[in-house]
Each structure stands twice: as structure tokens, then as C-alpha cells.
Image 1 (spheres, rainbow, N blue to C red):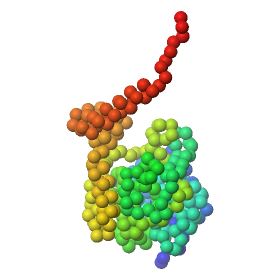
Image 2: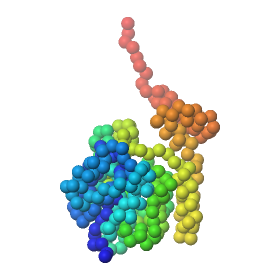
Image 3: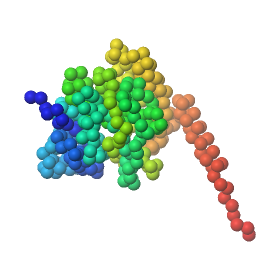
Image 4: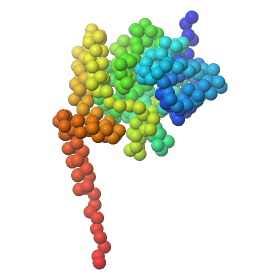
Length: 323
């Protein structure tokens, strides 16, 4: 039996998200487009995440909880959600994010009868201040292609399109056998979105922002307490290389070169990413090891010292009153 053409399955992986998941679920259930189900896939939480979801599910039968067993990562959780989904459309919502109430209605209107994949802009959310800013991208192209998605940064922004969260037809995923790469714990979104774009031939986009994204570093300069991200640049580069090889016949020379450029960039920045993560987590042994063996890390540290010195030199001199 085919699902109704406008029915949406919302896929939400959750790991220790008790503090944020009620907000995420409430935003999905409050959609002006009500033909939906929300599939929460718990990824081995040790907090009260499952209890919160069960309470909400008892009030709204559109919510379903899957307990995938153990901590397998967001890719595996999303794949489990795909397998359980019954909607004609799939939409991704992280457990620390939220939607504006009109998101699904507007996204499906943009898709119409032709588009298989639709992206919208992001609104930034600062978990410390509770404030929303944005949109995070000054604009989006009407059609997002492979070269757009794989670029290190989007035009006018300090982040890239891999942060976007599409709404897409389940038939596209099923017929092409698309799944998230479960070997990755970060940037699995980027790899999956690239395959979506390769298979679909590109995505329609709207510059309007309906997805409220919790920023890892907010406007206050403080990291989000709900982020579990760490760098896996080498693993992501290897996964991109496999994708490039698997879809070589479908990629244009320009797209293939764009993917290779991202691979080269990730391999180059891997030690620096590891250095910043070790500093953030207080791993002194890792910091010393990276400083000893990586010229790129030493250059990054020297640039940081130079920036601080310039900042001090630019600040007004302190004066003392006459005796």
C-alpha cells in the first residue's frame, strides 16, 4: 500500500538528549502540516531521553520510539529510522534542534510535483542565551548541486551546505538503496547529501529559514553543551574518496574535481582539527604529541600567538592618574 503523497516521516536520532528533545518533538508535532509521524531512534542514551519520549508518545500517537541497542552513532540511528518509516517523504530533525511551525508545509510547496530533494536555510540557535539568529546563509542557490554541497564554505558564510537538513522523497532513497555511512561519527550528513544530489541530479532550495539549528559555538563564544561532535577528518576524506570512485560515471569533471579538492583539504587540516579538539577537552598528552610531529599544528599555534599579540598591540594603553 502506497503512503499518502503528503505524509512525512520525521527521523530523529537521540543520544542523551533529555534536556532538549521535548523542544524538538514539540516543534515537529506543532507543524501546520499535520500528516506526519516522528520516529525517535534512541542511540543508547544513559539519561532520561527514553522516558521523555514515552511521555510525549502517550499523548500523541504520531510519535514512535525505537531502541536500537547500544551507542552506534547517528548514521546507524537514521538508517534504522529509514527502515521503520512509512511516509512518502523523509525529513531529518536532530534532537537538539527545532522547526518553525510552517516548515513542512512550505517545504512541500517548494517541492511541488517535480523536486525529489528540498533544502531550506538555517536559523542559528544559541543554547546559552536562548536567542535565535540568522539566516546562517545570506542566500541559497535555487538549485544545489554536488559542487555546491562539497565546497568548504558557502558564499558569504563561515560554514558549508553540509549543515543543511533536507526533506526528500522516500522512494528516491529506497530505489537507489541510499543509507548513511555507519563507519562515520561526523560528516555522515555530507556524504549522504552528496549521494542524494548525485542520484537526484540536484536539489531545489529556498532562501527562507525554517530549520532552527543549535550552533556548536553560539554568539556568546561558548560551545553548546549538547554537542557530541569531534573531528574525524581522515575518516571523512577516505569516505569521500570511496564515494567519488563509486559514482565516477555520474560525476562531471568539475564535480569530481570539487570532491577531490575537499578530500585534499580534509587531509591537510586533520592535525589542526585534532589539536583544537584536544585543547577543548584538555588532552595534554595529545596536544604535546601533535605539536611534536605536525608542522601544520605548529604553524596554527604561531598564527594564534600572532593574532593575540596584534590584539594586545591594538588595545588602548592603560594610563595612571598623575600623583
